[in-house]
Amino acid sequence: MDKGHLKVLENEPVADRVFRIRLQGDLVQQMENPGQFVHVKCGPGIDPLLRRPISISDVNLEEGILDMIYRAEGSGTKILSEAVPGALVDVLGPLGQGFPVEGRKTGDHAVLVGGGVGVPPLLYLAKQLVDKGVKVTSVIGFGTANQVFLEKELGQYGKVHVATIDGSKGIQGVVTDILNEQFGLSPSEWDVLYSCGPLPMLKALQVKFQETDKEAYLSLEQRMGCGVGACLACVCSAAEGSEKSYYKICSDGPVFPLREVVL
Amino acid sequence: MTASRLAVNLAGLQLKNPVMPASGCFGFGREYSQFYDLNRLGAIAVKATTLEVRMGNPTPRVAETPGGMLNAIGLQNPGVEKVMSEELVWLKQFRDLPVIVNIAGTTTEDYVEVARQVSAAPNVSALELNISCPNVKCGGITFGTDPIVAAELTKEIKKVSKVPVFVKLSPNVTDIVSIAKAVEEAGADGLSMINTLLGMRIDLKTRKPILANQVGGLSGPAVKPVAIRMIWQVSQQVNIPIIGMGGIQSAEDVIEFFLAGASAVAVGTANFVDPYICPTIIDDLESWLDKMGVNHISELIGAGWKS
Image (tube, rainbow over all chains, first blue to last red; front, side):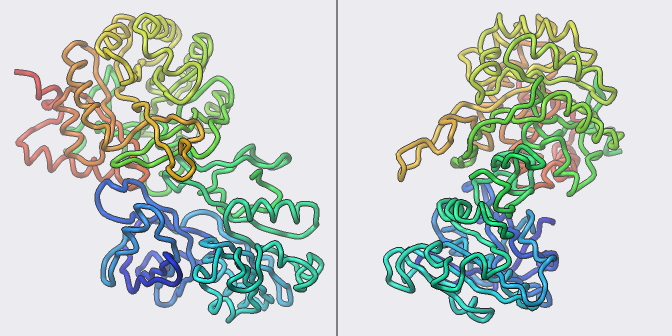
């Protein structure tokens, strides 16, 4: 973890208001774990003042290239969406604890579940899992067809199921509608589930799999201050029986075992 | 050479430079020790410590504003016992780092007990009496908005404290000078000012406050002019040193606080933007002294109003 300036290689829209920014620099060498994030100063000056936490979507360690996919939603990310190739972006990271992949072995079946701008970190995860011989199935949900992204990229690593709320692409519904027998994804058919997405999605996953004995992980999101665990802005309650009474999402997370956090 | 030009004496506390991270913005130092050697700091003001463990407020706890941020953390901390047995013990490894412990409470008895325990710790150099947290329902700011109440509490703390006591003042008052004078008379060794300004933001989509606590404390560059004005007013009316804070993010800002009357400074929100900000400011200060033709930083204290 350190602070550095990365050079913009490209910054292009990949879906409605969603951009992929490709950055290059030395700091990328440290980005070995999928599911970690970086804290980005979106523009110079004091407005916006704070950094923005953005997940690491993909990494090319050899070439020092980092891909992030973000929605230009607020003042900071809108400024970031205007960064042109050659510009430098102030990045702090990599931060947090990512998706654990160490215990995975050849032949395991991993289900990767993402919603909206929670989908990006699943790509780097899928790549690492496939490298380990793990079978990957992705289940990704969006609002409408024009918001869908990473379907093709995730498709390089395994089967991809898409859900949209309005049914304009894939099945009509949400990701939890796909995690069942009909799609060959009932809990007995996989070994581990990794997920990242909006809070209602994570809550639904927690309810659905809380009582199973399956290994499962949730990546949480929260408004952050420092991003390194000092300011206590982004805490969440730990489930009963956990080691701690609360967790800092930025430094203890953002990835937690599904049963360890209270959403 | 560097050390001597930047060294300040703060109510008997010898600091090698006048820059410290502000309480609440730096935890107990663990996180930022991953970036640099904390011995470089003039001092460290650690997170507010209360008698019992406090879980703080619900989230969201922060909201951004132009040039600033609102926070409503709610004094989350592990309680005095754990602060003493874990955090202060951990900080002992930094042998050249005076530790200032910010203490908070709900009742006078709470404050006194925390002060009694913490001030006896071998590596605590001073206490910062937090009578100005805007984010807790009782205690905090209620002690800091009335000169008589503030003075009474200061007196009680001074009775038990083994180290100098700095009283951290709230800017959310009509007349900060009267409170500053009252706590000086009650025996305060110094002042910290300012704490955050009470503020609020409302989300247009939900039509509700962004912060779960509804209101929060405003910090960052946006509050700097308020801090400068208040330090200017207070420093001319008291004879105890002031640790200035409120939106500092550069050596230039530090100089401005000194000119207003501060004898040291604390850097808060800027740590979140740049984890290296404190050592960067310390490095930059000396070249500013050169630029200004000043031999020693203490020559600048109150130079804005001294004739």
